[in-house]
Length: 464
Image (cartoon, rainbow, N blue to C red; front, side, top):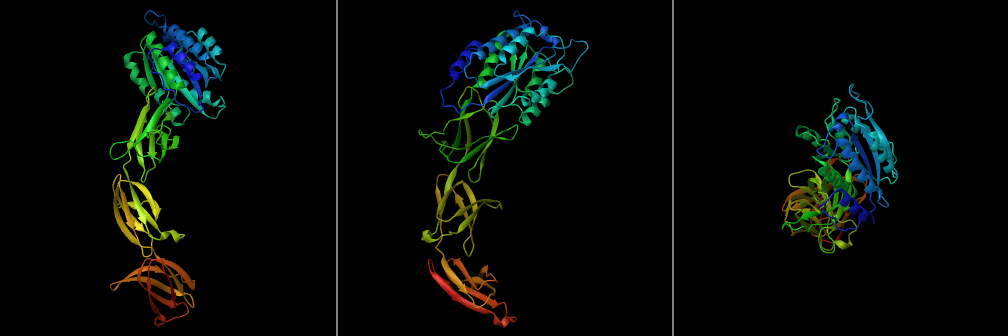
């Protein structure tokens, strides 16, 4: 129902706007739109054959409000702040800005009434008016708890009171008070246009027609969400990688805007999501290791493609006969030459990693280190023999260690726990020696060396 009325609004305000595809939509956020209207003395200027700038703005804003008033079940609230309308120049009053109509579902008649009686007279405190917008939104409750707060600034001149509109806008966005503002420049000199690019999304209204189209585009962007898909590209350039969490953040605020598990739909294409065209996104795809999505601006009214390379392959760790073990050995995975742990993978599992070379610490006893290269679209397997269970039984607790014996070379494996008389260990197959001395023995000659052999899946008892 709401989409049909939105189409009617856009037909009134603008022609040639792109039609939106019919997509299932979640419950929309409440859009709170604050219009900041320039009523400074310069708005008395003539605008071609259409009348004064103020007359054109009043006429087109009235049409916009009439169209919005026809929307059933609207998900928006409107408010109006005006500057330069209370005190004439000279003298200059840089505090001349006021919230004339606060937010509310029934605010349209009140806004129209205020617009009709506006008479330009004062100066242009743009930065102050933007700063005051923070309080305008804060003073109005957000009934749904999910509000998009938007500023639409309509002005025909530059800041005249020494403020910095760009900094005021940046603070509003950085603090998450508003999304990126819209600015409609009403017959601005070309030399002034660049000054507004940093304030928000700028529309250069050179005449009545472009002003009308600007209002239509803004309404389209505010009230209609935009579809997108995240393409995780495989080594062949196809968007076939999937099933990883994706987190998208607002570039300006750094706050998380969207979090979801990437999905391929029934047509085996990346599933469609709805994104806010007023937000510039950056993101992280939680592959191992994660890959980033660089800063992305969403094009309203179009289906957007957001892409990043996610070339992955599988690493399979195998231990034959491991199913009977309650605590399988683990492997620590690191990028080659780095110390940061990327993942701890249990044996008899297969995990996907970004293609590359990794260092692997195998947490068996004894420990092993491997270097493995994972290729995109392929599986790399490492197989280790099943360990054996070893029970060390001592008459009294003591000090000692176990060594792996290979061709006369002794390799330290682990220390015994000096407070226990019975210890259980899982050791890889091989020949071992245990060197032990009781705590109570205060002479080296009481040291004992015991030889034993471990085979896969066996149980060995070592008595001392």
